[in-house]
Structures are given as structure tokens and as C-alpha cells.
Image (cartoon, rainbow over all chains, first blue to last red; front, side, top):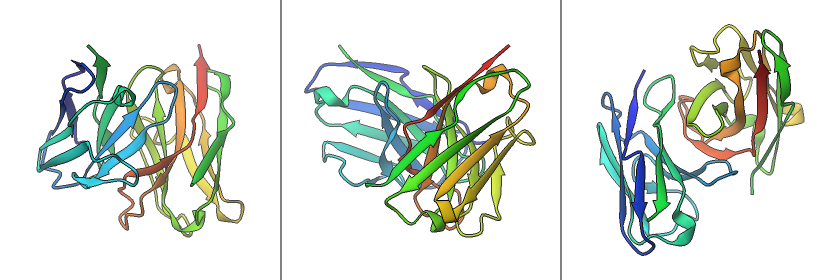
Amino acid sequence: EIVLTQSPATLSVSPGERATLSCRASQSISKYLAWYQQKPGQAPRLLFYDASNRATGIPARFSASGSGTDFALTISSLEPEDFAVYYCQQRSIWPLTFGGGTNVETK
Amino acid sequence: QEQLVESGGGVVQAGGSLRLSCEASRFTFSIFGMHWVRQVVGKGLEWVAFIRGGDGREEKYADSVEGRFAISRDNSKNTLFLGMNGLRSEDTGVYYCVKGAGSDSGRDYAASWGQGALVTVSS
């Protein structure tokens, strides 16, 4: 099983600041990584797939990169609606696995 | 916009059974692989099961539910199911019905999610 480790667990930032979230895989997963955003009381929403492809309707302030074992999600200038929990997920091998999440909270 | 609506959640005693349903609309349900993903309240996400699109002959399960849970689909009714037997306290959580993004392998991303169904297993 591929273990995805997200860091930090909690990121405290102010609106307008830049946020960078990390996801590290226990073995190479090539480009097969997605990022999701989850707000309280809601289901997750797909942000990026195949490491860097933005899903439909995702604002340009979000970007993602990486390959192999190291991946990153960057929010260039945080808007109030961006404070949420972010998860990464791999589809390289079964079972599909998720990272433990990064909670982006208001500083 | 694609829609997935789960039903069938509730409270069940340990060792009991439950069946979740997920009614899909606004997309061609029959051709897409479908998944169940669960989340302990306040915790992270865990993939549970997958069924291939079309005849649904390929299924995959997380080790934690293998042999106890069964995923199935009825394409004529655009509905996905998750049968759960031998329920344990650690199965408590919100169960999401998820539409795959369309990967041929079935190993896929979660393109659309339902609102979730809460399953509580009491001991």
C-alpha cells in the first residue's frame, strides 16, 4: 500500500498570503496524484488530477506540481473561501489511498 | 451538474448489516466506474470499494472491508449499492458515493461526490 504523508498537518495563514502544501508518497507514483478541498459539512471537491491538471472551475490562484514521490499544492493569495482541509490521493496502484490532510486555517 | 444521492444510512448494532444506495443522475451512469469512500467524522478519507462500469464484473475492496462488504450496481436504475455485513465500530463514518473520472484501469480519481450517508455502528 502506498502511504501519502501530507505536511504540515495545520497551516495558519492570513488572507492574501501564499500557502504551500506538501504531499509525499512512500514510493514513486509517477504523475498519478489528485488534490481535493473539503469544507466543513461538505463532501470533498476535486481540485487537480494527474499532479498538475486543474479541474473544471478551479480558480487560477490554485496551482499544483510534482512527480514521483514529491508533490505540492500552492494557493497564491488566500481568499476567505479557501480556508478548508486539503487531501491528496494516489491512483497509481490498488488500494487507492489518501493523505491525512492539511487544515488551512486563518491566522 | 452530475448528481449523486446516497440513502440507507443509520444506526446498527455491531455484527449487523446495512445496505447503502446511491442514485445517480445527469450523467451516463452505466459507463463509469464507481467507488465508495468513507470518512470517520472529523478524520481523513478512506477508499472502500470500486466497481467497473458496464457489466460491473470487476470489483476491488479495501483490506479492511474485504469479505464483509459487497459493491454492486443496477445500470437500469442508475443506482450503486454497498452491502455491509458484520459491521464493526470502526466502520462508523460518513460513506460517500463517488463517480470515477473515467480511467480505463479503474484506478481513478473522485470526479464527483454525493453528500454522504452516515453509518453508526453501536457496540
